[in-house]
Length: 478
Image 1 (cartoon, rainbow, N blue to C red):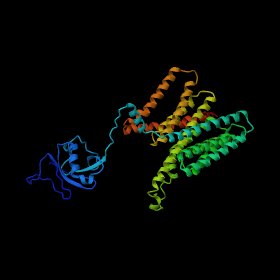
Image 2 (cartoon, rainbow, N blue to C red):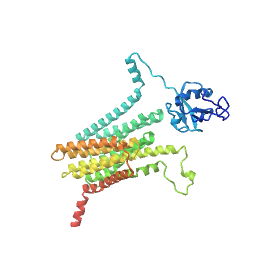
Image 3 (cartoon, rainbow, N blue to C red):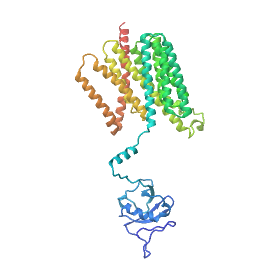
Image 4 (cartoon, rainbow, N blue to C red):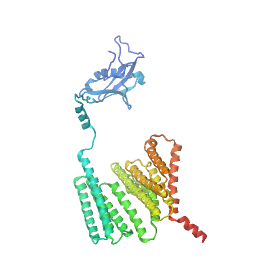
């Protein structure tokens, strides 16, 4: 036999006349199995697949048991191709090979009836369970029905100036409290995160509606102020009480706080809506740039002063993954809140400019620049939730600008068609082609520079919309 082994003592195979085999057609290698090893002289021109059964026979004692597929590999590398020889793999004398086993794949089922084959393959396909799909559907349906019902109630109350407006606010507040308590019981008592998250969002929605209806008269800035404050407070309270959905509740709470600040400015000052919208957009874009540092500090990962001992500065090994996950949740929530506020502010500015009369060019340019900035930010963060948030908010802002540009003044149908084609082509290019391209360092630097230029263009456009240039010109002339 052309394979020899000696398990305990390193001794190369010798031929029948006592002379050691020393021909170029053999490779002297060491083969290691999980519990033993052997020094073998293997033919260099025979395919690896033909050598494996002989090697398994030599090392059958430790490897016997469940049928398995055996393979040879170089230490720390992938398995050798069984159709190639040792020489073709570049195996030299003295190489170390590893013999490993993997479970044998189940045989391919055979069917006499195609209907049985179709049923079996469909049953084996990876699908979510019916109960999980039903729970997600119920959560979406509950949120949709609650939002539609609350909007109808608010519209009816403001249009008819109904006497029961304060009573409706009380009912909504009570419903929000019940939903918040039920969410805490669902998650902390039964471990159902989806139910807790759904009930927490419903509680925030009920509180927002109650705050909007609690202020007599309206709708106006005081109604919006109380509604935004109540919604933000409920979302942040749900984050503490329910204990799940940190990113989503953070996004809702942060968005509510920014909306409350804008409503407070509208209530106290006499600034027009377009100024408030532009200021909200600028503030939100600035906060997006600081979200990473804020999330690191909130999660306790920020560097401590040098006077603290190194053991106290660094979190423990078991605590570090939890803090990292917490920082990621904070970052996702903050970016979601600020991107939504920036998008809403740009769309509100566009609507205010159109209602004020005059040329909507400034509002269209402001919305388009804000949308492009949000879309550009989607490639800077690897998280799926963050990328989707930036993509959705940027697309909504660009869509609003495109609708106004297409409908303002006399319609120019050819240009509208060109705009539709350009937007579709640009979206497909960003989603399919751009990620597959290999960018040179100079090209990546150029893209980053273009992003910063687009971000910097938001400031002069906001000043133009707010009328700052006209005020400075009038001040200079006077």
